[in-house]
Figure 1 (cartoon, rainbow over the protein chains, first blue to last red):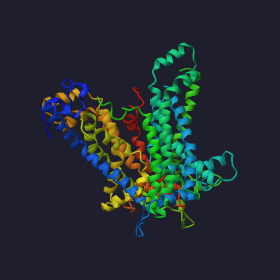
Figure 2: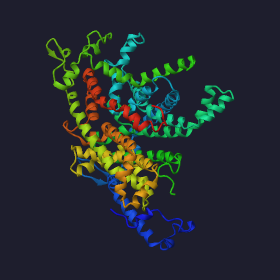
Figure 3: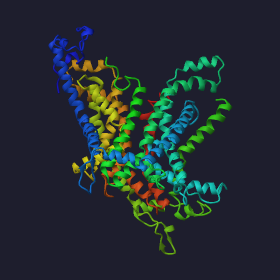
Length: 331
Length: 293
């Protein structure tokens, strides 16, 4: 596609138009004709370039959202005729003791994993700011838990926690720490601990990388000045590093909370939400309501509720990000 | 390096490595052990020797010796694990298609957001980037119904479409950020020579942004290779299943054989293990500001 008046590069000739008037509809007519048609041509080019991607994302994002919102008002099931029921599905969800239980599990799960991921992330990032022999190898190996499929993580941790063939029982027995194999994955609170450990393992690399990025961005002369003032390593970590990485730590914490709310693959492979409902967090609850109970309407009501909770977290995330971080300032 | 520092750093590094790799190390070890050794009580993992029987079973179907105790085949054999190579191929095909689509659709879109002004630019950009923050499980039913209506159930194309939607926002965001670091003056002088925006993208921007293209491509590939929920919904037959679905299916069988499952899992994560170097080089290094490495 060619652009009429491409000479202007499509940039608004701001020197020709007084700034105070920019954006005013009346002023547009005062623009030289070539500039106006250039901008129209530019918009056409832009739509041609971004259109296909927008179409794909729109079809698979906006439409499903609308569908879920509408579907949550119906009794939908692949085996029964559907009918409009208003907000009944939401009433059913909020009235169900299982929903409350899943909510509690999810909150506990977030409480168990998010702070631990942060602490391990900070420690690991602090270690990786140091140069030592083999540091690159350590950094690359560190990515492993994050890079593999979460179902594979679930399987790997099943290898650790399984009772008859798990490595944990075998090693503890060998070391004389236990005399009977512990049924990790079939005892409710132990299974919950196991899932939390697996989640921490799968998530700490991302936290480490983000926090390491924040640490590397701290101006080096701050440390030099502190060293001149006789501050020790711990002191510098407390009064320079921690305050500087605080914004990133908050972002990581919110993002990890979002993940705790929606984690699914790992649970599916490791415990399947069990034993009983001990590890049934919200996302797994949606899954079992929808695809095991086959109540699509109720599942979508649940989905809307969980999406609303996520939106609150997302809004908080967005407020923490610098306003022009995504798109850049509209110069 | 002072002695005290070394005493602090190396143990910490070793501890971290152990934590990151221990579960895989156990799986990799048990994949070479006969089931008898794994189930031995008290544990004696190495008494029965090491063998490649588990892998041979996956590829050829030759039942490992330790399963034939007294001429009777143990029931616990996980036949489903033999689908792993096929599933890895499926995952690879889908992930490669997703990667290509990300480049084809993502690069022009990112260019438009980085360089051009058009009505709806900000709004659509936010829709694209924020769309990925909505929990996938919340959209599972609508996705399923859309794919079903398009007649793409149990077809790789259906999965490719879903995975492309999931990854495209990241690709556009990261490429747009990178494209903005290229001086616009280059584009403008090319325009003076009569080049169109598409030509500029192909001839100038993309060659200059190759590292970020590799990075986003890797990311799309990995996400697609790993994605489980939609793969589980969309691929219904064992013929079209991907790696995460096959692994989860074997692992949730209560009668699973860990010797075979660990061999299958080791095979399944191997491609990702090989990609760790490039992942560091093209996705992470720039982020953590490493002139090093």
